[in-house]
Image (cartoon, rainbow, N blue to C red; front, side, top):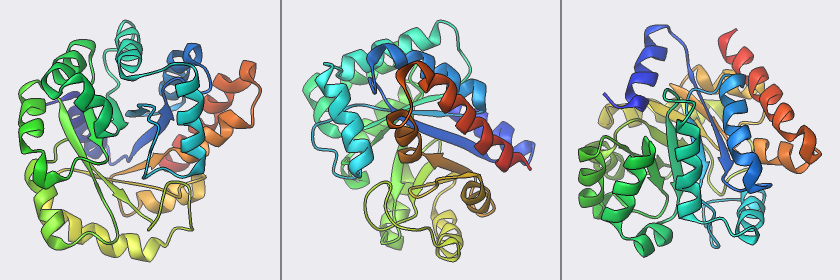
Length: 265
């Protein structure tokens, strides 16, 4: 099994739910990304989603857009993100890392070159927002051959046909976007999420993580009651925006530890 699969299986065996925080590599500063990743683990993260900065992040709301802009202004690109993962692996061989981003940087590097580079540095999975499942079977097959998982998004508007298509090639977990719209928008409807998860699980044989709109321990706990994992992104970026640089790492660790505590209650 991959590191992601091993992690989520171990959590399920303990009747625990996964905590998957997201940060954008290079935000607010490239030198802080590695300490932030370690702080997330110390705070109780099970899997880290590491955003690859991109100039046109169509699924991301204003908060994560700003994070990408800050990272791009610092010159952070895909190769830099891979270098950060390599550094992380020097001291952490356990926590899975998922790269989350868009097709353009991967296509510029070349799919095969990217997959080899990602495998070499210890990436565990990739979520490419604008790779439709119908068109990336070759990419998924090569990822799987190199021991990495392919993560896909599903949404409230996903049809049974689309869910089944994702189920054919998704490994690791699927990321259910609980809201219509972009990251950080709207208010969660727990009943709607609870109704959708069984529909997904009819077609998908991997755990389901739920994200978009989870902002505190109460919401995280509620969502975890109907899902296998919770994903938190915009709220962490806001923490970074509102905290002085020298306090950023400790503030993020404290926030994640509060979410972990809420999930484990």
